[in-house]
Length: 113
Image 1 (cartoon, rainbow, N blue to C red):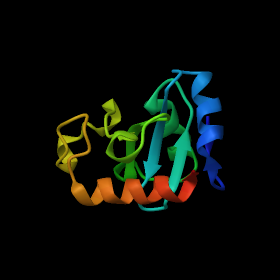
Image 2 (tube, rainbow, N blue to C red):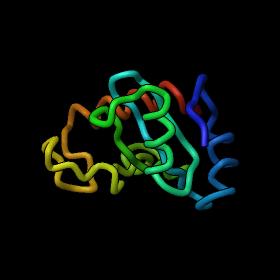
Image 3 (cartoon, one colour):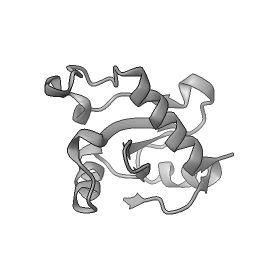
């Protein structure tokens, strides 16, 4: 598990994925602070790491990166930590298009080709 401090390549991401799910890596983004935590068995573990680092719960969103995919198939907005009816998101999916766009920008800043 790590909070990225600098960009990593797709090749590095693939190497990390091999140690967990093979072709997928779990991630949590802090959409307010622009942070990206990666590489855990559970999104909840990354969420806890970010909370201990000073993130606020309402800013944390879980998703998966499919390391061999590109475009819309690269990011899968699916995580149990996203279920929050109190925040207007009663689904595992990230429903807010602005939050999705912010997550995509964070991923683009940290994962490079």
